[in-house]
Image (cartoon, rainbow, N blue to C red; front, top):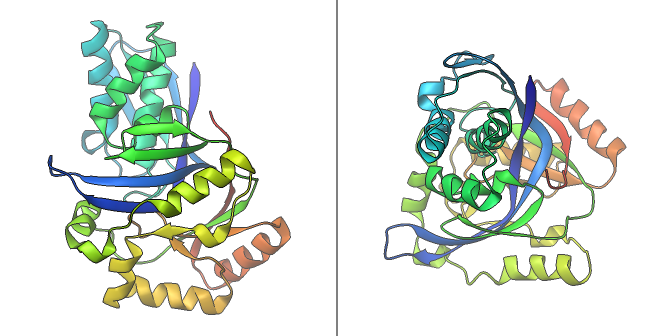
Length: 284
């Protein structure tokens, strides 16, 4: 038996520099894994068998199947496994759950099947699965560039407590593509915010929450939709530095002290708002 964790992530910065000739967008982002995670329990089996605890989750609509196929294609392996996924990361939440699960499959089955694939081979497969899958092979704090496939590890940010807030609003499949299509040239930046945060971590080991930035907020919060009202309500409750996680709809706030985080969490729970207390996590 092998148990592999698949952590959630947040984008501390997310800048879009412009549209690429291949149809994708050029991004620059500092990304961070959290202790909030799914877990995968792998045991022996003749065939590949997935089982999840979340009724709305299906392996057929997940990258995990493609991750298995990628491993088999690269190695010729026909081994089986029973894989039980304990989902905690909400679906279509902007926290990278499906990409993280796919990376966990690559890491886990590489060990479980004794494939001995080197890190660079796993990275090649991860890049073909999705833009941010390769990040989850190592996790921690990292600089993400290109369309999301170029990952450079950074010194870890100082430990912080994070509250993830899951709004009670509809979640739209394909929302990330939709948000990219809504970006205007005025929403493009030059990447200097991300460069500043990365440079501070490299040279001083500092993390300034004033540098938190997500260009998708220019689209989401400017439209006056449900999420805007939700954010405004959370700010009144006392959630500081409230930002969109990836393409959302999850919102997150970063705090230094655990008692303060626990107090805010209690207030959110008292209002029956779905929220989770987690913390920054170093590399896997």
